[in-house]
Length: 247
Image 1 (cartoon, one colour):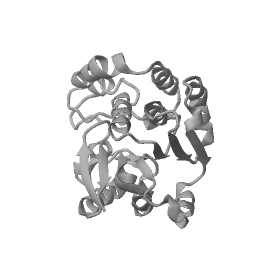
Image 2: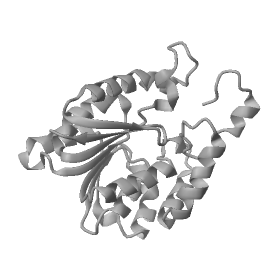
Image 3: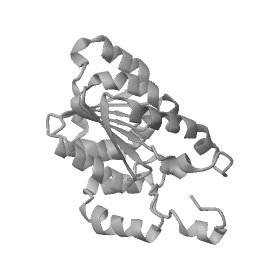
């Protein structure tokens, strides 16, 4: 977001990359990261899906390319096989995960909008990874509650990525902490929330940023105080907090 005192011309120069959620002060530096590290290694299906999503009117909802690269590497580093994603949109982060998983890996993916998911589905199918995805349309909480009812699901997920309605993040955490294994990871997206987490309460903000800001602040406070996890907040994309379950 433009800082106070910046004119319209300056604002127009910022955030020209679709999905640009970086909090770096220098757009040129972020562009350097993309062009030097991310785009040269971005798998062709992910590039295709990124460019397809760029044409969608809600493209700001997509996972940024640098975060997609980060998720792909995390999945490989922990040798994940069973994962979950809450909030899918067109599936860029989902595809990043699916490409990283082994052939028999599985992703339980949930979103309230199947239409957006089906926009990216042809690309996912062409990439040969759609068999790894179990997509459920609708709210995630009832699905999570159903999973918790069966003891065999407790501690069965290697990695869970949450990028959905921020006002339910704490409700998700209460449930998925039971479902991720000890030593497994949870990733919460948007935990720096456009930088609004350090903005004064009367600072000018877009309505949706202001609405969800308090929920993000509440989540960040709760994660820092939760003895069941180790955490690391990273300024990748719009902020991602990795939680490693330790008990």
